[in-house]
Image (cartoon, rainbow over all chains, first blue to last red; front, top):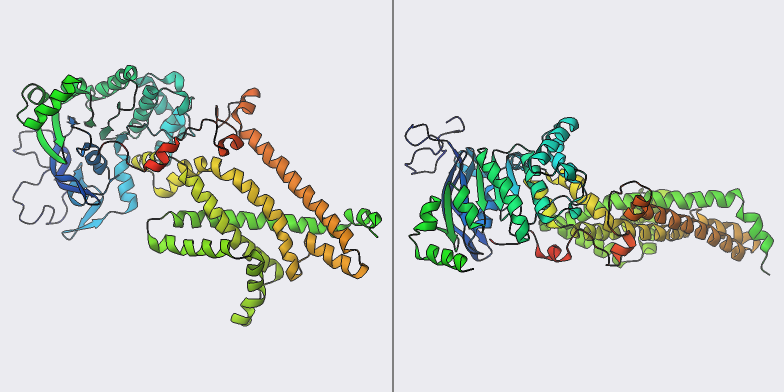
Amino acid sequence: MTQLQGDNWFREGDQAQPPFTSASGTGEAPEMVRIEEVVKRFGDLLVLKNINMTVKRGQVVVIIGPSGSGKTTLLRCINHLEKIDGGRIYVDGQLVGYRLIKGRLVKAKEAEIAKMRSQIGFVFQRFNLFAHMTALENIIEAPIHVLGMSRDEAVAQAMELLRKVGLEDKAHAYPHKLSGGQQQRVAIARALAMRPKLMLFDEATSALDPELVGEVLKVMRQLAEEGMTMIVVTHEMGFARDVADHVIFMDHGTIVEEGPPEQIFDDPQNERTRNFLGLIAAD
Amino acid sequence: MFDWDTVGKFIVSPFFLQAAWTTLWLSVVAQLAGVILGLFLALMRMSRLKLLSFPVQVYVWFFRGSPLLIQVLLLWDGLPKLVPGLLFSQIACILIAFSLNEAAYMSEIIRAGIGSVDPGQMEAARALGMRYWLAMRRIILPQAARVIIPPLGNEFNNMLKTTSIASVIGLEELTGTAEILGAPTFSTFELLIVATLYYLLLTTLWDYFQRWIERRLDPEYASKRGRPGRWQGQKSWAQRVLGFGNPPVEPGKLIAGGHGGAR
């Protein structure tokens, strides 16, 4: 497709189709994320061992797995918050963190990485709202200073987003005056204000009190219904079953099993998947 | 005998008003330069690149580890010997030495301030597509300022008094003026008292100014005035610096580093 540049776009000896053409021309949705043989180390610890996955436009992919399985790291690699040690990641046809020049990978410039990140929404487990800014200021900050949006336009958009997440009355509240659930909804609005083509959720409800989980999941559910492409790392199995188009089970840095939610939850093929889901159910 | 009349005569004299002004502007300029240079040193020091951080370590080690008086004398007496013809004026010499010295202290203060900001703030900024400098300017430094400004106040108080060192190379700030005017008339003691009174006046005024800023940023003061404070609901600087109060940054997370949670 048009993103392809040069002759060495795919690896030497790679006989596969270039990934961004639909496989057989059947009009399938194009790929939003493509992860190829990704390896990540923290020192001597191999956290991601040869991960391959694709996410199509409009798809909701949920990644589940025990702590330490590498799912958060994988998510962080997708917008280059972590550098990968091997393999390649493409978002919407573009290499993440690198450029391919004459068949060689070259580190991308800061501006290029920043631009790519501005198109990917990331929601953190610990919200990470800017502590010195009100909810509204949090949401308008990046549209104004990164996208160059006018203040009026940014504020109008922010108020609309706050309405969407049910917090228009909290526009002028500072983060520490908000509950965890409210903070996370502002964080989602902040990410959406950049009009991202992809949203990444890193255990967005794990730091919340149980009674606050629902309000955040509701917003995420609504987003999925609107057709947003989402990759969601979560321990909320109910959400995964209802909302996911595709579920990935990770353990020890590998994808152990993946498939539609019915298959993973009702008829898991792998021993480790069964064990994990059994433990969750027994919880 | 101690002569009160001399004190009274000189305290309102143009000599000392001029000298006080010299002390004040020397302090302000050296402090400002120290803050700006210190910021860059702090950012270099925090770099993962040894090439950037190591020279700063050496710099700080030297300027904090040797007397300012000697640094001034090295610049004043030593440099022209090393580089013939390179002779700074007294003022330039003092400003350079004081700024370089102050930058070493400020870099450590600023580094601590930046280090006190939750690393998640930088991650969130980067994830939104902000570049390093934009994130520093808009997100990190405004939050670090809360931690930086109280010790900065102390530094300036020190600076006002430390400028007395400038007298050793004959600069006519407060201490130098007292010595120069006092020597021929054997009234050095009286004039040093005059200088001391001026130092006390300057530091006291600064103290009030500092407290005024503190009150301005104290949310309880602001809410009493019916204006929402920028740091609504937070404790005063003094409270925060002393470690009580309830700042939004959780100390545990400062140590945890960038990537907590599951991997």
